[in-house]
Image (tube, rainbow, N blue to C red; front, side):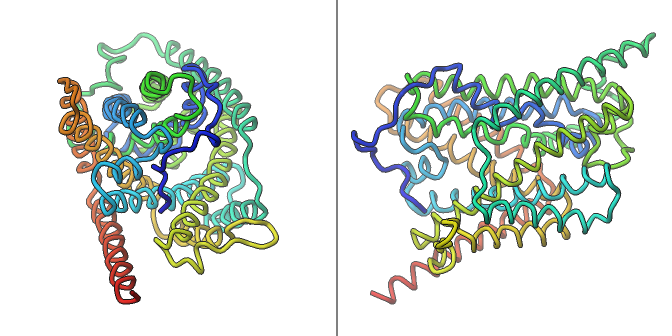
Length: 441
């Protein structure tokens, strides 16, 4: 993996132009205002209707972790990754394992995008699921083989369009809910707490999946070299992004839960939010939300596949993976085409063999491994090794570790077993490389 913690030379420094509001807006663009919608149905069923509670519980874990990311960005201003933070504080092998876990995130992101797009497209044109899977895998792969990338301006306008649709949908949902009057006692409390269905274990499992809502907030730390005041603003922007995302997400799922309280029965659990919108605003709103989420997820899938191709290229270039394959670049397009094809193959096989829920849980397994490690790195740097110790340097990162580990432990056993197997494979590969390099000396 690349040594991203290397010191940036003065003549290659970036311009410091980004204000706090710029950083927060960037974070919201990355996370997307529709983030809780694709995962809504799965969380609703796992948490037994307590989606709001799950989303807010995940927000607490993300806020604690956001503080640690912000603090570590002060120490490694040119790094901006969990891998670099852990490697800098704990050494090469722990950093490598965290990087290996992050690779799981990257590999699974195009996979779950493929699954969701295939389900959403079937709501428009009911072709067999396998046909849609093959279509989207070919689409994502072909676009990346051509070197087509989504521009920042496209993402900006797409985010604005999604925000308008979200606001429009919430208005229709609120209108639908208030036309249901008179209300039963405690009706508006049920999405937070329903005594008839509440289970702490179920809500914990739902919370573990609901964290997918916040994935991407840590990207703000990569802008440390372009922020006007990185020591102050990176931490604040990361926290504000998680807080704003959590509030918006809670509103989106709150009205959805009021409109469709029967969490056990959705026409399709993976695209449940589209059906909830349809109940509130008819077929027109159903197709508007379904189409908006489909377009957004297509963009995410294309970008995610290019992201994993770049990560694999970096690992291949540094001989963390077989260099001849993963460091290969097409002479014509200058794209790491072997990696794009490999990612497409993983998405194809995975979309036909695992569920959206299992893919999302596995992605979150890798994310929580990174989040826990970043919290531990902040504790080690600021409290154990620091000269200016404060109680917050111990309490916040340790609490972040505890919450992240608990939520990770609440994932279903299938995800935990598969995640541990993935880590074991990474450790074995590192051992094999070390022995191979020793024998060649």
